Image (cartoon, rainbow, N blue to C red; front, side, top):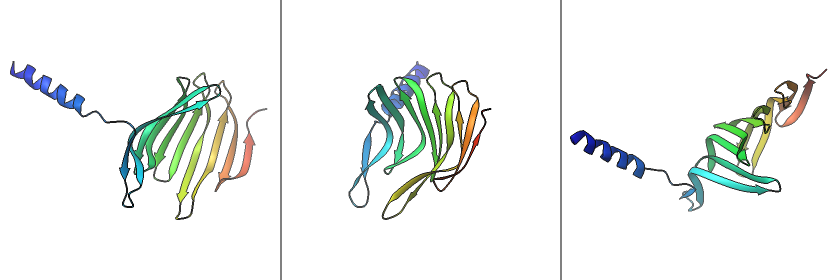
Length: 145
């Protein structure tokens, strides 16, 4: 009886701690910033994009997953200023992958690709690689013969 009571109490406490979605917090200037777990929906001509991830004080953090019409479309892993991105074909194979960086100053937010970006065919075969430096394409290597 005692074990059952403790088990029920633990289950109730865990289910009551469920995180609310799409919450805001105010920063020191009383500006509302997205915070915590978010689900964002965007409509497109051919369907709907749904992005799920976390914000910390208005900035995306950790892992963000985006689906298009219920299928995996994109995955972003965000660490400090660097984001590792993978985009997928409808069959689940990787379409492209690479890194981008976000630089934030008082005047602007600048987002750009950097390093090698790999592009694949629907069959999963590497087609070509583009190399970026500060957002500018510096080289492109085709793997197709």
